[in-house]
Image 1 (cartoon, rainbow over the protein chains, first blue to last red):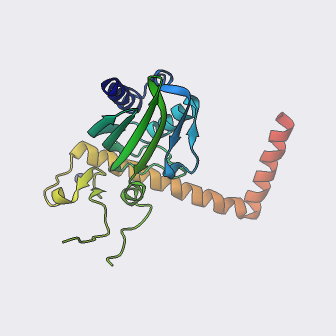
Image 2: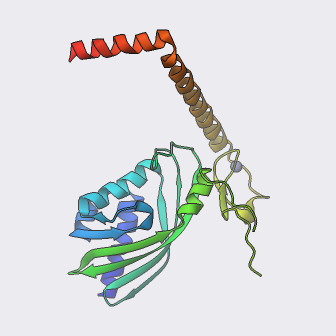
Image 3: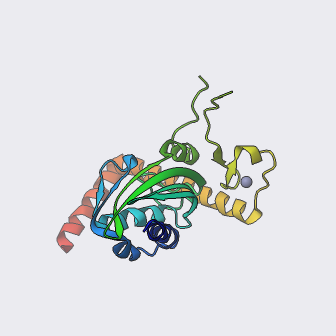
Length: 142
Length: 79
Ligand SMILES: [Zn+2]
């Protein structure tokens, strides 16, 4: 079961995030799945909202690619450590395209139910993204 | 020893926009095609920003305000 869950998470990364094939979200998530990400202000609930979230990232970074650095599975959970890169070519949360390429890292935990992703929790380097886009200045040395 | 440099380990190259790790900053060489694309992109963005500034300023002048009013009346009549 752990291996099957790991394969589904890999498909989410490869097919949805990296290839922009958003229809696979219907296959990989339960219909009322919930994504928790503190960068998004609200939980993202339901497969349509999840597609919109991934699509939004891909509109902002059309060449967006996530590489899996580490993947661990136990019971109904799969944990992921990842590195993503992309070029800021579209509006992101009101930040107009900068043309800059960014590299960010994050960790995600997925919970599975009846063979699909039911819930996920992600924490990623939002402040690093903002620094690379030039939206926040480098911090003063303390 | 932990040290805090206040800047992200990756930062975009100022010339070409490529994401460059701090350890590679000294040795990074811009890809010429990428550099030209990035410079062109920046130029277009600054031209758009300048146009928007000028347009906003124009809309505050008497002539601009009348123009906006006529345009809005025409839009209402067409609807
Ligand atoms: Zn460069």
